[in-house]
Amino acid sequence: MKVLIVSDTHRSNANYFKVVEMHKPDMVVHCGDVEGSEYALSQAAGCEVVMVSGNNDFFSSLPKEVEFRVGKYKCFATHGHYYRVSMGTEMLYEEARHRGCDIVMYGHTHKPEVRREGSVIIVNPGSLSYPRQEGRKPSYIIMEIDRFEEVHFTIAYV
Image (cartoon, rainbow, N blue to C red; front, side, top):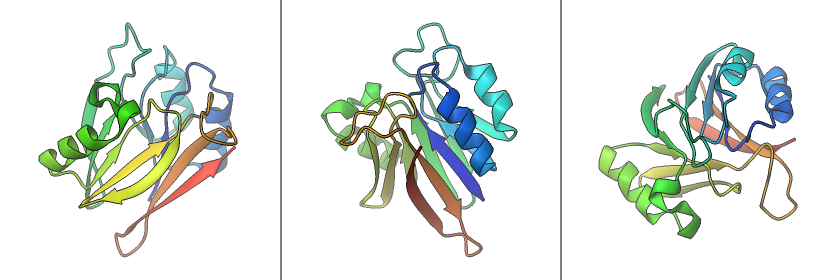
């Protein structure tokens, strides 16, 4: 199974459309700041889409956070601003651990990362539209579940 994880597109969707067409994922997870593009992003995906609201989704009816399963993994997606991720991921990690989640996906910082903390894998795809990491390349993550039900993450750039 291939999952495309994105965030912080901020209504600049050209890179999103390009990445969806290139990877043809089985599922898309958007970690917020879609700014009214919910319908366009969902339609373009052609698969199941999990989407949460971000701090710039002012009038959105999207949920603030959502729990779901990918294979044997319990996942938790949020934008991250309610967990103060700009200051670190300690609160986010504790929430994911408290919920019994294996993977937590978040956005907000526009900086990609994949790391394990204790029993939780913490994933941020960065931003496809306004990257902030060194080099400032638009980024996303491909999460793949192999035939042995093991998860693998790849940070990719446009």
